[in-house]
Image (cartoon, rainbow, N blue to C red; front, side, top):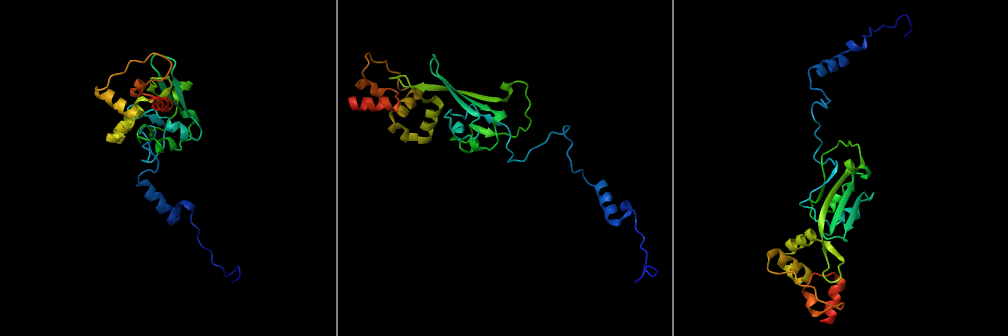
Length: 212
């Protein structure tokens, strides 16, 4: 076929081509693909991993979240040289990588969670911190830090009757029930038999067992 016998096709403009015209008409009468943000708040999917938040009631202060945090953005600060020893857990949102390991390995499953909050705006470092405070239980013999009170209470609830096989948990449960009074500290530097009925750290518990 030479140029003399070649047929010339009429080429329509792009907007008048059937395929493009069909897409344009369907787009006019269909819903928009974009959201009306910020007039309509965005709803993240259920598995969205947003800002980390502590639940003060469910958190037991064990510090497991800080142990498994890859960027180490959770600090565990113990204040024991005061009348009311306490532990403060501080999560730094500006260093978080949103991996969700803290939520995954939380013993209670609810102490720390990834929320659906996706807006991170602040004007000072404190705006990017999440804090929770827990009372600490001290050894009644040597005064060393034993564990957070809520952690021992959680263990008592989890173990049930088996908690009474551990002297410290038994005394903790008895005091919460009001059937065990706090003992008077014995005089002297040596550990005595009466010290066995005290809340003790493992080191002091072993010493009282050997001296009994």
